[in-house]
Length: 98
Image (cartoon, one colour):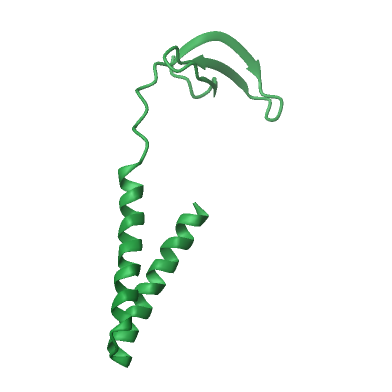
């Protein structure tokens, strides 16, 4: 995440520097910097949209019958299990609907 943020900041800096070079100095060198920064920004934003993870299937949590007391809080917990993914979750008994 930090690398992505750094690349976005560097690309934005290139866009700003290119625009300043074009407007203030009026040389053609700023155009290359402006275009390169814009391509970096667009590519990074597109990459985030294109390769995002699909939403996980709806979990079908089932109570396992296991209950225990959380050692840190002393709160009673119930173990829930999703047979599709194999994931286990520990939920306080006070939040469970009857």
